[in-house]
Amino acid sequence: MTPLLETRELTMRFGGVVAVDRVAFTLQEAELRCVIGPNGAGKSTFFKCLTGQYRPSSGDVLFRGESVAGIPTHAIARRGVGIKTQVPNVFDGLSARENVWIAANKVAPGSIADKRTDAAMERVGIAGIAQRLVGQLAHGQRQLVELAMVIAPEPDLILLDEPAAGMTDEEVDRLVGLIAELNRRHALVVVEHDMQFIRRIAKTVTVFHQGAVLIEGNVADILTNDQVRDVYLGKQAA
Ligand SMILES: Nc1ncnc2c1ncn2[C@@H]1O[C@H](COP(=O)(O)OP(=O)(O)OP(=O)(O)O)[C@@H](O)[C@H]1O
Image (tube, rainbow, N blue to C red; front, side, top):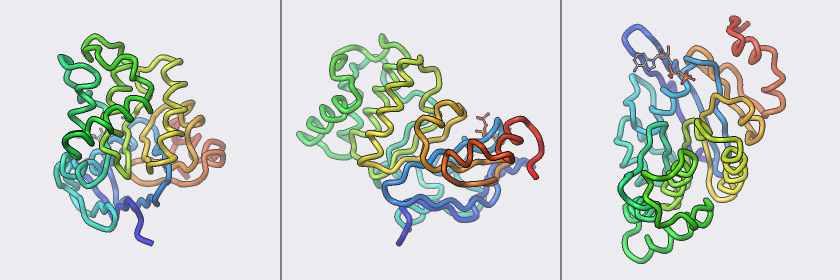
């Protein structure tokens, strides 16, 4: 079966630094995959190659078997990929609902956008702040508005880069439940540094180290793996 998302020999160099080194990654329909690794392991660069923020130096990224390497982020989104980057992507001067509506309207204009906007806000739990200006919301609420913007176009695949960053404990609790709920309808790739968060959401985990995949497996095995512990502690992998 053609994977939903695949990378082949994916490589990204910055001058002499090989940030992503011939990575082969496969995600099937309906999967939830977490990508972890210590600082500088290449997670963000890998994410940016998936989302069109970077054009890979070599290798390929395939969505449903078609190459998307190097095409712009908005074009990848239009193919059915919801993307939440680390950089906020909201209009502060507009209401929460207006922001979500703009995202929905890009893919399905008119009354369908209205329906999808309300459904996404309900799913994320922000219907109560629909009319509030985004610029006046707390950080965690803004993150939820961004998540509603990601799901409103009803993507097949959702890519999240460090979604728990800067959230309060309460907001993280909510995000944990939300990711499980999202995974009932969407495949997800979650890039995350925070191991406590990973412990709570992950099923299958891919560990990056020095730009390459060190190991892949179920979360319980990964979190008790000696090699993984060593690279997090800054020791050389065996
Ligand atoms: N724009 C860039 N120019 C030059 N080098 C870069 C650039 N972006 C990343 N790198 C280098 O590539 C390597 C991988 O960085 P990357 O940010 O992808 O790692 P990461 O796993 O996301 O780390 P972190 O958890 O700290 O965000 C590092 O050595 C980093 O210094």
